[in-house]
Image (cartoon, rainbow, N blue to C red; front, top):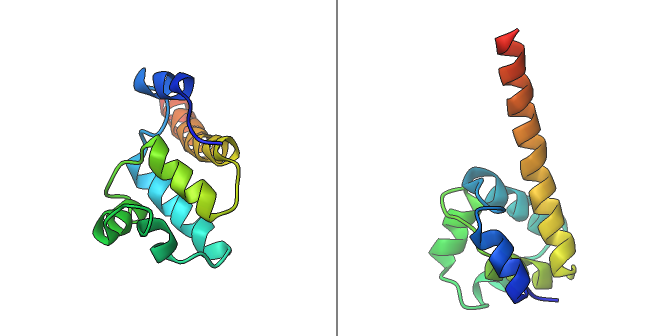
Length: 104
């Protein structure tokens, strides 16, 4: 399943894939864990340099790119999207806890 108009609206409102330094490296590791080549990603209409920068945490993801990774990883789009958001959430939770510890 690919992103719907409702999903696009949700992410347009500021929710989602904002942690550039996290999303790309997470998907790179996930790709490598199942032996999917980078070519399987960039052959879907992205420049190799863009994918390389993305996987090194230098470029932002969009829903289409998450869909390309989901297809290459043989995953459902929403399952992968949820995983990406959960990784971001866990890092945000850690940062929040650090701030709370500093406050006390």
